[in-house]
Length: 580
Image (cartoon, rainbow, N blue to C red):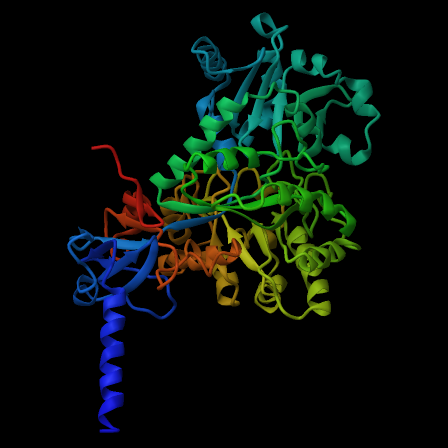
């Protein structure tokens, strides 16, 4: 009898366990389910209860958890995955840009460009106040700054301010009417510091040609009249909608406290530097923030530890907003690599200027800032394009590791050039590589505007995904939307092919799709510091799910590029399906 009682007890416990689980709200079965749990093979089905994953397993196991009230979805062999996660995006700004005149990186001959601007203006899409403001302009235009002036400084444009905003976010061009309004002339340029003057395109006599970069560009674009709250709220709604369309259910907003009038690269935070945070709060209050937003607050690159208190006060004001979290801060270590901007910090000087670009962080003190962030339990997410910026960012984190050996989930994003000496340091220091591998392509940006101006050695390590992965670095995916498309499927395929209109960009750095599936799921969740809540399909995690239109494990890279999402679920609720 003593032996029988434990057996009875075990049977009762097993029965109660099954009964406890037999209340799935939703089951999805007969599919190919990628859980993103390391080492777990594909399974057939998923059960969801109260917005969370109840169980994953075989059809038989999961269907046993359904009752008469359970919603049942037959996947009919289709692929089910966790929601995609974008580790670097500016979605509200991107959605706002999409509502107006946006070149979307297309390069038109200048006569066609002028006609297009006229058509956009006549259609009512081009104006911000009385300024004609064009978004998404390719860097390929900047070497034609003089020709832009010949076209947009006379005739109908003589007294009409025109601003062309570079798609890279670091550069732009303004015509003479706008420069006159801003009182930017040869005398002002001559009086600038050497660094600031390097951010202004000008003739030998210091007359500006309209091209600006970094902090000087910020001063120009800050004078474009800002849109109203309703316009921006519409953009925030559109940002959520577009992400859902691509299966993206979480993202890192990489400068959430920066407003349209703020300088990004010389940012000075105040207690009222709210940026897009009130928009996220308003969406949340209306029940429309059906996505996880990890909001990074922008810090000045030369911030000292005491300066972080201001950012802490901003975080406090938005504490408790559903689906909004604050993992830490974002810092610009440098700018962009492409000619003629060349504000990225490089180890070997640019061949044309013989300069090393602009390192925005102070190597002597950046480590102190990292330590101060860690003491607040914040991560630091660093924009680093050039190899010197990457090295100095890692040096700052190394300083913190000497004081506190336990790594935090700091991340470096963009990583266009990385010196091989840095590859093993990512794993050693626990730094995650947040990469925009849609950019790993043979095109004007990586060939014509870069190759002639940097060392051949450095050029061989553009977007070195495989080298970083082989050295043990954790790779995470990001878009930097609006700089490029927020579609992760494009980036996952591009990471493998690395092909573009000007050829393949260093085939040796190709990375396989399985690695990229983790880059946009579990690894990305770690960047957002949400890996306990999302990023894989494991019991207890939120049921953010996507159903795909093709077998992404078997199709060609070209077919993978065109993957479509059939349904997106957030917390077990369907938030997207294509219009029938």
